[in-house]
Each structure stands twice: as C-alpha cells, then as structure tokens.
Length: 335
Length: 272
Image 1 (tube, rainbow over the protein chains, first blue to last red):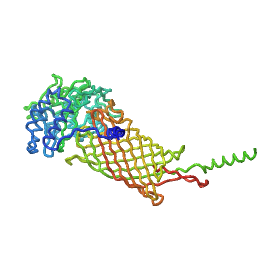
Image 2 (tube, rainbow over the protein chains, first blue to last red; image 1 turned 90 degrees about the horizontal axis):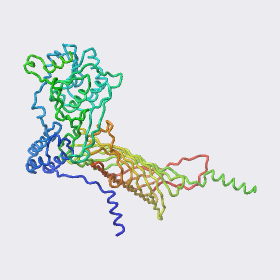
Image 3 (cartoon, helix red, strand yellow; image 1 turned 180 degrees about the horizontal axis):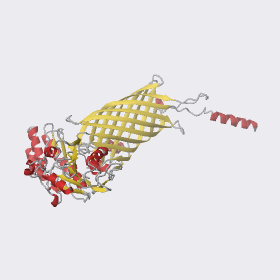
Image 4 (cartoon, rainbow over the protein chains, first blue to last red; image 1 turned 90 degrees about the vertical axis):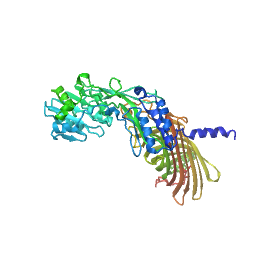
C-alpha cells in the first residue's frame, strides 16, 4: 500500500480540477464577487485615480444579507459609479445601473429634429441608423450616423457616398452616437482612409493585478478595396459629448486623416472595450476591460477635444431660429 | 533439385493465396450519448454552469497488419453539444465541439476470455463556448492536441462482453487567449501567447468509459457509461468541463471478402 500511495496521489493530481474561486449566493457573496470581478478585470484604475480597496471599505459595511435586493442593488450601483465610467453597468432583473455624469454635466449640443425639419424639411434619405442628403447651402453632403450597433456593408456605404459624390465635401455627424461595434466603425473609417493607417493600440489585462497589462498592440486599418469608394474630398467630422465608445474611436481614426477636420465639442470618451462577468445571484457586471489608445498611443477615455479653433457649441438662440450652430460652422469649413 | 523447386513453388503459392494470413475485420461502433454536464470558464464567467450533454461518436478499430495478434489501432470521431444554465437559471451557455483521435494499443489475451490493451492515443479537439449575455467576451474557443496513455480491458463470454477504457492526456498543446484579451484583438492579428504547452500541471483530462456489449448475432448492442473531465489553466484563466453520460450504440465487424480466395484463416477482431 505504501508503494501505491504515491501512484494514487499522482493520479489524483492528474485528474483533479484547477480551483475556481467561489462566492456565496447571497448579498454578501454577490458583493464580494462584484468587487473582485472589477478588481481583477477593470482597466482604468490608474487613469481614473480610483483606490478600489478604499471603495471596498466604504461600501462593504453597507451590505448585509437581510437587506432587500433593490436596496442591495443601490449600494452596488453606487459603488460601481465610483469608477465614473460610462461603460460600467450592473444589470439585475429589475434595473441596469448607468453612470450618466460623463454626458449629463455637458451641453447636449444636438437636436435631431432641428436638422431633419429645418435643413431637409423631412426630405432626407435613411438607411439603417444613417440619415443622409445634400444640405441646402454650399453643395455639402451630410451623413448622420446615430449608432455603430448595426452593420452596414461596403456596398451600402458606397450607395450613400455615390449619392453625395458631386458635393464639395461632407459633414459626417456622429453627435449622439453612443457607439456599438468597433468593426462597424472600422467599416465606415475604411471609406475615408487612402492608405494603410495605424488605427491605434490595444492594451489588455494579463492577470488580476492592477498593473498586469500587455504591451500596447499596434493595429492598422486598410482602405476599402476597389471598386468600393474611398472619399478623398474634404470631410468635417462633427462630435458632441454623447459621441461615445466606438464613435469615440471612429473620431480618433478619422481625425488622423489629412482631409478630415474634427469640429464640435469634446467627445464622451469610452475608450475601454467592455467585457462582462456574472455574480452568483445572476446579475451581470459589464466594465471597461481593454484600453484602446489612439494612433499616437494616447488614451482617449476622457474624450477627444477638437482643435481649439474648431471647438463650437450649439447656441440655443440659433436653435430657436431653426439653425444648428455646430452644423453651420461645419459647413462653413467646407465652403 | 526438381522436387525442391516444386516444393518451394507450392509454399510460395500458399503464402500468396493468403491462407495463413489472419483476417482483420474492421470493428465499427456508432454511439449516442446523453447525460449531464458542468461547465466553467473564467474567461466568460466565474460561475459554474450545469445542464445537459449530448454526443455522437464513431469508432473504427482494426487489428494491425504487422502483428495482428498483439496490436490494434482505432480511429475515433465525435461531436458533442451541451446546454447549461448558471446557478440562478437566468443565463444559458452553449458548448459545441468536434473531436478526432487515433490510438495504437498492444493487446494481451488472458485466461477466461479476458483481454487487456495498453498503448497511446493522439487526440485533437476543437470547440467553442457561447455565453450570449456577455458584451465583448461572449465566446471562448477551445482547441487542443494531446498525447495520452490509454488502457482498456475486455471480457467476453457467449453473447456478453464487458469492457472499460481509461485515457489520461499527459502532453500536448492547447489554445487559450490571454487573461483579458478580447477576440477582436486576436482578429486584428495579435497572436501572442495563445498556444500553451499541455502537461498535467496546466491541462488535466480524464476520459473513462465502461460498457456492456450484447452480441446476439453479427451486431452488438452497446450500453455504457462515459465520464469526461477536463480542467485547464493558462494565462490566469481556468476552464472546466465535466460530462457524465449514458452511452448506447451498436458495434459491427466488417470484412472485405475477395470471392476468388479461399478463407480458412484465423479472424482477429479489434475488440479490446
């Protein structure tokens, strides 16, 4: 038997499972799971200046197994909001938490109906999440991309660009574009780059520590292949604070192109690609997990500001007169 | 001299006729399996999911040409599908995979109809997990190539046969993304640290099977139990998959017959 013991132990070692940390399925267990998931996967502690251990000490005493799930949710969402991150949401069966101050503390700078009614008299074209047409003044084309959630193919984008081909330039309006899929933003950007372009860098976590990050991975976008259309005439890219996430990244790629002027207001940022994890009680936490830098290796999480001379906000007096100050300014840059 | 030449010719003719060469039927086994599964993958979620498991398998075994009395080889193909829920039951994970394997075993006949076999197996597995509720990490790929020692035993009497097999991969390679790496980054071309050396410290697997064959005629009905436990750790990520299944299938021996030949040779099947 003594001879067999090492063999049995070896066999157990061979077939035993690698451990996975487990948490209890109650409020306290959920809290530990939530705190740990963020601790191990969130990517912007340093940039946001958040001491996550201190946050734990602040909120842990507020949690008990006797509190209701709604009360518990409120404590957890307050804790999550300490990250000040629009990409970090706690989802339960009855509510999803949002940190809204990244946009609510800024002017809205966009009124959809103002353009639809006063510039197009509701006579614009629409394809998916895109509206487009020729503006009444200056022979300037206008494209508003409201989201990158759904994909348009290169052929679809060709149809839009060919419809505006005789214009002197384009205003691409990504105000209130809350993002979506990076690949959909890439599909649009490839129609505006003339040669292989460094799009940015990605940095992912390599372990649970707050400093466990990979080397920045440089990645490139290629122009869309012929016979698809690459737009080389002047472009003005219009942004506001609600230009977020994939739209923020689209802005960083587009503004690096020589024919593109970035104007409007600072974007909302959201440069962390979110990943999701679960809590034992079935809730889900989404958080910024991979940092995407711009083509110069600069972090864009706080937002991307247009060059100072192209910064403009909407004047509400103009809006009452039916004019979009920011759009008019963008058009003037092309005329 | 003339008599010697005639004898040699007869001997050569007998050899070329293949009368002494044993016949090696192909033993083909088709199986269906159904049971329970437990899945965990910390890339997707820290929770353990549990649900049901379905599988299809095909195995082709044959005694080897060079020493048919003591060596057999087999090819195996499989397809598996799992559907599992988290402990709260509000999220579903799907798993699908295909596998292929080849093994070569040395067989020994023991008294009382018992046979044992031991040798090695090479296996390749490819699959994916899907957890649709996640944002940019909704799926996890699984791929591995492994080498394993394998042992099996078989007892046969009359229409009854009882067998068991055990396989423990000890070497190989397997795929895992980096700790927090998204597949979007991989799709952009970052392929660093994706392939890992599999050894018992990083990749543990136990494939065990026990079955009963009932062979009233040329075809055997197989009823059995199969357990497959996988656990791996790489880049700080841990994955597990445990399935327990009831197996039901049929097994037949196939033999290619040349009508021009006379067969009086020994038949060596690949039951092991």
